[in-house]
Length: 428
Image (cartoon, rainbow, N blue to C red; front, side, top):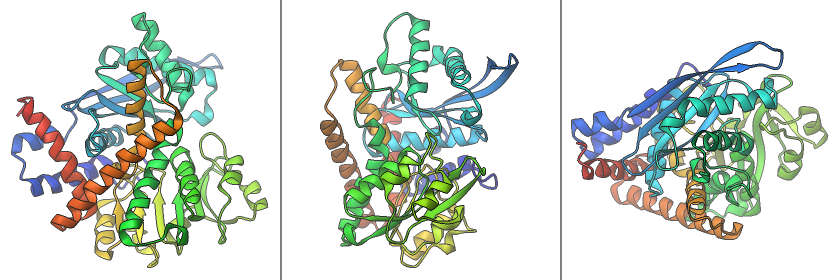
């Protein structure tokens, strides 16, 4: 969505093809896994506040359900495309597999901009999307969750519509719900915390003291914000964040050489991760171009916004000081840029491993809903830490043992698990 010169679906397929060769997968398995099993295109008519009727286009893609019901978020974005959703659904399959949870990959989206929609209009989009897809979704089939520019309120509207259609209570239909309404404690922090749990383990392996490191982060939405908080809690220093300014309709990098006060930055940020530029200046921030986050002299880069952000045109701007790239976003690095990162020896924590904390905690939410017993926050985050640490160590160990790039090692583990499930079911 963010860069039309790169097709994320083609990127996802290239990544798959590379590892299919490494694994020596047969032709039928390759054909089955390199594209979605099912996809839905829907039109959602909404009566707007001004009395007009507007038609919104929505999608749901179910990539593979060999290991369990498909799982994946629904995003609202004005530049949403079906190829973006296809790619994200595929990455979700690998993400669930790499952390070894019994789910497959799905993704959804609606072409719209919540910034320009009232709550009532957003509610109608949510309910309309569910009405169009309810026959093909459910706790044992396809379980949505929040994503870019959707939140717990949207999930509850969707749940209510699904329960109205089927005349019962199905809290396991959707995750990311408000706490007290079937939501899990810790879910809000989970994706960002998961990024830092894997980063912490990477720094340990590299023999680097996290308290002596600095980071630059792209994005300041849910993932980036909580990653920044956890990183600072562990002793790191965030010196720059890049995010959208909704007033100017462009992105800026907010920099403070002695470290940003993340709580203070959060206080001047809206629900979509847009920072108030004037208030940032009052906090002592230097205002730079939105792309400047990537060229900062830091130890760690965390792209945590949208896909296709690190490309052949900016990858060489990465400082020689950077030791670790932790991909908080889905597909933030294009294949040509990835090759340069590989050649430079930057330690990469690939997206579908680094940001798997969200789907892991969503799985925990499903488990809690289905058992009607909810855990304390500390228990949720402790289980999350165990899962993320275990997954990271498995990938890192394979990478060292086989001399693989971290992204390839993560794919080898994930794709092997899905391919085995497909074979066990007798599909190929």
